Image (tube, rainbow, N blue to C red; front, top):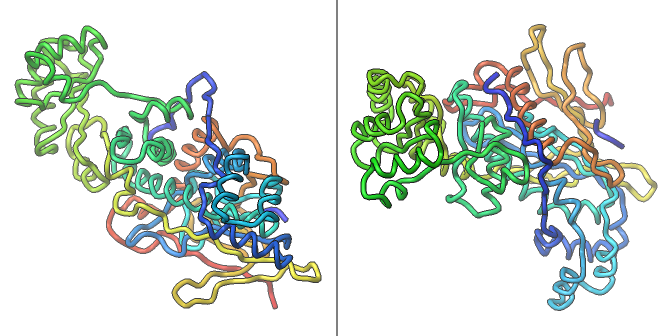
Length: 456
C-alpha cells in the first residue's frame, strides 16, 4: 500500500558533499524498545501497521507550517543499525531481553515511507509522513522521526516567515553559536529550505553544498590598534568587496573610514546595533554622498520576522538572523505527533485505529492528500482522504510523495540535491497559497483542512 517567488534557491557546490551520519539507533526513547519487547512476546510485533506523523495544530497564530527534515531522516535511516556497541549497552543495562536483542541485531527497515515533500506547506492534521511496515519496525523509529521533523520544520517555518517579510532581500543564517553544534547544522539546512540565501555554518556547507558567508566580528576590530588598521588588514586579506563592520565605535566615522580604506569597490557595511531603521537611512545617504552607490548595507542584531518587516521601508540590502531563527522564533517545535492509524487484524484485513482522548484525538486510517486549487491556481483547501484518494476536479495538486519503498531510499531526497529540491518546493508551495500567507498578524490557518471518507 503506497501513498503516492522570493529569491531563487541557492546553487549547490559542484563537489559532492560527504555526509557522515553517526549511528542513529539509540537516538530514541527507552519505551520504544520496551514496547518492541512486549509486542514480540505477545506476537503482535509482526502485524502490518500504518503510522502517521502530523501536527494537530499550528503554533498559536501561525497561518501555515513548512515541512523540513525528511532528507535528514532518510540519511539517518541508513545508519539505524544495532551494532555491537548499541547491543552491548542495551544488554549491560538490562533494557531489553535476549530475544529482543537478537531481533535488533538483525534489524533492517523493510517497509515504505511516504509523505509531504520537504519545503511543502502543511496545515493542521496534514498527513506529513506515513510509515507502512510491521509494528516493530515502525515503532522503534518514532522518536527519531519526531525529533528530526519537529526541530527542522520549526526552523523552516520560522525561516519562511522571515524570508516572506524580507520580500526578496536575501537572508543569512548565522545562529550556530545559539544552539547545539549538530542542531546548528540542521538549522542551517532548514533555513535554506525556508528561503534563506546562505549560512555562516561551514559544516552545513560541507555536508549539503550550501553557500557559506562570513567576514569579521567586533573582536577583530578591537584586536588592532585602530579601526582603520583593522579595516586595512581585512581589505588587504579579503579584498575590497568584503563587508566591514562599522559600529564597533562610532558608526559615522566607521563608514567614512571604511570608504577611505576600500574606496567605491567596498562590498558592504554591516550594522549590528542601535536604531537600525533610522541608521540604515542616513548610512545610505552617507555612502551615496561619498560616492559608494554600490556598497550594500547588511543589518544584524537579534532580528526576527517582525523586525525584518519593520525594516522593509529602510534601504537595507540583506539581513543576518541568528537566535530567533534557530529557536523557531517563538515556536521551537512544530508539535508533531506520531500515531498508529491502521493495523492488520488477525484475518489479514486492515482496521483503522485512533486515540479518542478529547484534547488529543486523532483520525484513524491511511491518508491521502491533495491541495484543492481554484481556476486561478490559488489554494482553497487541504483535502485529506481517509482510505481513498480525494477527488481531483482537474487542477488540484497531489501532495503525497514516495521516499522509501520496500526498505530502499529512493533517489533525489537526500544530500545537496534534496536541499535544492526542497527550497524550490517551498517557493512553489507558497506561490499557490492565498496572499494572507504573508501576513505576520496572528490568524487562523490560511486554508482549512477538509476530510473525505468512503461512502457508507
